[in-house]
Image 1 (cartoon, rainbow, N blue to C red):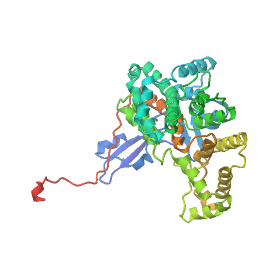
Image 2 (cartoon, rainbow, N blue to C red):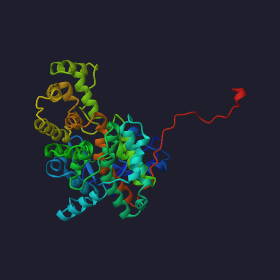
Image 3 (cartoon, helix red, strand yellow):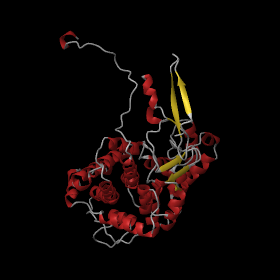
Image 4 (cartoon, rainbow, N blue to C red):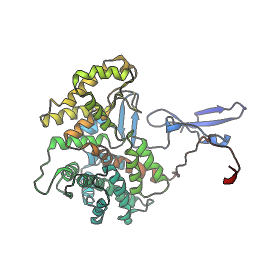
Length: 428
């Protein structure tokens, strides 16, 4: 905060108050409005469109320029050159690991991929047709009942162990949710596989056959995990932070994040984009559909973003990944992919969409990739949760480590009834 930079708020009754102007290392300046309470007032900002709820050094987004950095590293570089566990280390610790640190971190994650055997019994309490996200909310939250030795949130070592357990066990739980839903036996993790290979093994292998990971498909899912690992103070991350501000254990906090992600406005965008492409059905209908969008007859899914007012930097990586996966699977003539490319080309050449800065986002192509990988639609948001767990736990850890953190307590603009006296039921 630059003490020499002050904004002054003057009321119509002549009262005034000084509001310090705070600067980050990147991004716009921020008004520190905490002094407004001295005037007996609060600010009003529904959905936090113009409010910074915390300070953070983890992720930076410039929506106008189309930039996304993890700890200062552009997402495009990480998606091309890094792997998911290295990104996990970066988000959690602030720096990329050296060779020894990476090996140690990877080994620690592998040590925790198994879940307590009694946890497997939880699944039988769900109906077979239960949505996998419902299972995720319940089972991840239940981890706190099994790992009492790491629940002291004020102990940095406990926070580290909890972080490792969540990074390692959420993929195991996710694959178990899928297997339970489909009626196949659980496949337990194998330490010979990499993190993403292991997840795909647990998702797709069966006891009847040997499983051989396809490196192209593994790399595709690795990129999906990297692209979705964190995204600043979105709805689910803010939920994790708010839950964590009360002192709740990390497993409960991550479960709350999964619940927030489950909402279709947050985690369901790639499924919605895929459904839209299926509704269009054929390339010949693209122009008709685009006109229908302009006429408010249809909704264009997978375009535009709450934060990005330019191209989503993750979208280009996902488009390239889509090419690679479909080529590997000899699906170059995939109908939905052809539709997606034609829809993108048509929309981006139309002044209506250009003026409104409606560009494809990461969800536009990710649904096609996930389907090509063999992941069913009801698991799309679960994949998102597996990837975002590292972002949630990193944000939670950052908040708890901040000695100045307080329990979250938003205020409100009350518009209910004024004081009134109780009337007995016989006189109403």
